[in-house]
Image: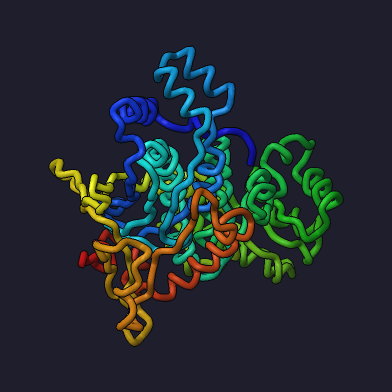
Length: 439
């Protein structure tokens, strides 16, 4: 990705910097933390996503001539601050949970240590990425868990804006989806892409048979034919007649799905197309996927529900200053005390307690030395450390960015899901599946 990310922020980030430069506090070393006070209502766990995108955007956070000229025209900050912004580079350290990790209320998902002026400007950027991507990944993970190993494709690009569509495809893939319909997501993040034809292609032709024949001629008998533009039983018969019993798949996008799928399977088998797969793509979410668990469905395509976080398009994360250096050089814990919006001050580290069956039982957050401290873990091999260094002196660790980072996050998510208690996968409303304890 190219281009400056500096204006992907709120105005007050810059006005705070302006005032801090004026009173001399801008260079006070600070520690900010991104965390969620609670999970979306009824959810039992969340999945961290967006980390690799966030690191890329932090490295691109530069004020070039166009950005500086806009700020000057709008008189957002003083000229002296514009001069400082012209040389802005993030030089700090970023620690956090690995992308694909499960998280719970209070988990210190990202900590950013840098001078106040460098770190505060990243608030909006960090939250806009983590809140959306983690919301999508958390919803997608629930869908994957109830799909029972059947492939799921993300196909919600037309239900969100163009940038979010790419981010959603990436987050869903990390959460276990198998492919996306979005070509830009395929190009940017290396995600497998899929797709054949919509109803418009059938309607373009003089008959459904003409449309099917044209598609098979172009894509081969292994293609997927959309059979519900008109009458589904007729569509099935026509599809097999045109493509033969080796037809790859049929897609159903409407109707009472459990009943329709069962009838289509029976018809396909009766026509000799016993290996033809059935894909369903009709306004699915985790609840309809669960309802289809006993139906002869071979694959799913999910759109609106996954790109909107299945009802929770933002994960509810916040970004708070939790510690700063005092005049004596020592760290001073700071915390917000507002009603229902409290934060816990201090530099933190985190681990997950795993029992003898390799099941997660507790999220432990240690307040003290911060993520550099390792004494908390030395005496207990049942504690799995959760925080890794994502960026050092302004440089992102390449293991967590690009295509490599996406694949690593996807693999890590799969491993983490094996640790969660079985109660995590219930779709009914419930509390976080493991508690968070501060020490």
